[in-house]
Image (cartoon, rainbow, N blue to C red; front, side, top):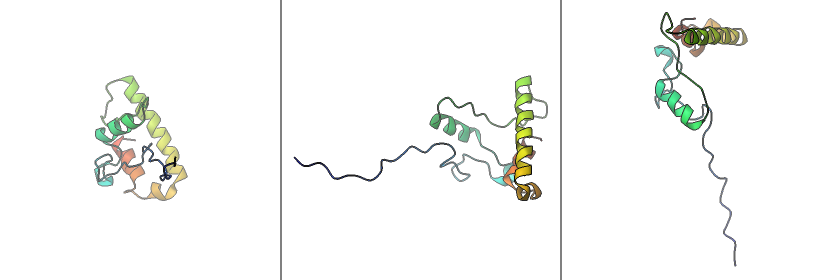
Length: 105
């Protein structure tokens, strides 16, 4: 009895941000404030069960203390990215700067 020939590598399910793009509607274009859309967040959460990813807190006065805390945390983290990536920090059209503007940092 012969064994069947080996096939190539089995296809892996994309994880993380693989396959997420502006064109597919998962991310906002830079001109529209960068960041992920609600559709992109839902897609990410389907691929990564247990994920707690949420969309941006964009209102000027967050509805709850939890949302205000999320904004404060994001702004602190992205301020660190501004230090790590000075080229992006200087460019007002970079995804980092646009996302910070959207979050009202």
